[in-house]
Image (cartoon, rainbow, N blue to C red; front, top):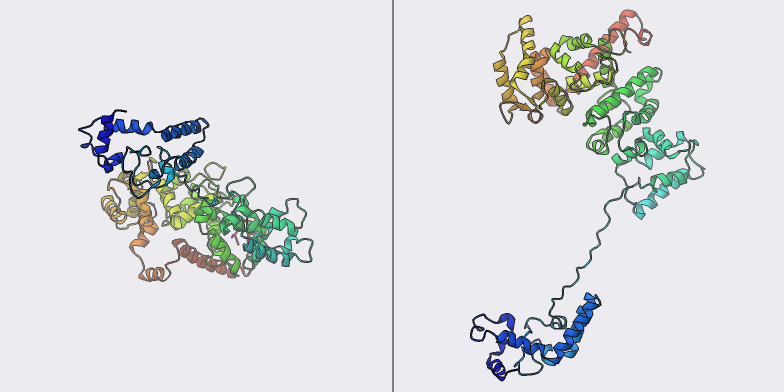
Length: 535
């Protein structure tokens, strides 16, 4: 090493030895100063041993151990000057000095290696949040359930199907008319008995205990290895409801109408809840609907005459009587001429043609040109309540002639032309289409005035009236000449839907007609004349 370099080093300020803080201006007079200092550090025996240790550790592919070993090696091999964290070294002339030390580094590990020591991240254990077969029940909940189960199964080898209803309602918290479906789900061998262990294995071992109510209903009803519910999956609970509910006791002597009631309930469930229209009711659709709350309500009510949603006998009675009135030959099918008579010839021929073209919904009927009972249920629910999404979508598809998802003025005019002709024939005051179009645009307020989208219709409360303007003359006129008394009634019961009000009015009317017919026949037994009336 040249003495001149040593002299230069001795003449430097000690702080300049901290290379990380050395200014580029200070290096201008001595451009080779940094290289000389580094060469000096490398010539130290301690540095040579340190480099050899690092190379050996790298060869053994043990990076983490190398880092720790280098820290220990540095701490033991370097002089005490490097271990001081309070002041930098005084002079590089000392054999133990090194200009590579940074004042801020105080730990031995950072002094022992030119590589920066990166601490390993702390491993955070994320608790399990997805359980394919349901979440495991907490011990406390499991113990409570086992205690309740022991009380019901104590002294019994097992429970028979007629004894299982109390378990279904009290332990499983399901509606009582689920007992038969749940019993058969557990009794896979059809032994006619469910033991305590079988029930525990299914309800607790299968993690059904911790599921929400909708998922429990879905699991009990669906077929194994199936990811949706079909109409047939609801048959067991409806048969038990008909056999056990006091509000349906009067139907037990007429199995034919029990079957029609069950069919109507299922059709209504799928009409409102199965929004995809596939006939496959998914768990997501079941959770989004109000079927579970309706089931619980039915299980607590003694009468099903009033508004029990899907299970209302009043609603079934109106739907079936309307179908019976149109089905003149009682072959359980309706053609175009039959449907034209609906609502005192309220509908136009053009809209009926669209219905029978099966644009809004494919018929379940296999007879060409005929509408079955299920198809009629979808029709009447859509016709009498056009404000809800199922009805809006039904009629929107009918008016959308080209199927492009929007309604244009030409399409609206096509259907209104027949309405205008009918008003002229009935000597009603006519309204030109241009005025009607302005009225419709004012009501809907679409995003673009050139066309009306389904989204526009769903955001307007008067969308149902737009359809009545186009193809239902009776409701069009009734809306223009509304009775203030009826308006006040609607405001007093805002929770009732248009379908609820229609069904209630029709039920009263049909009941009065039936009473008059019974009085004229001199008999109170209406079941003897099944070909004259459905009840």
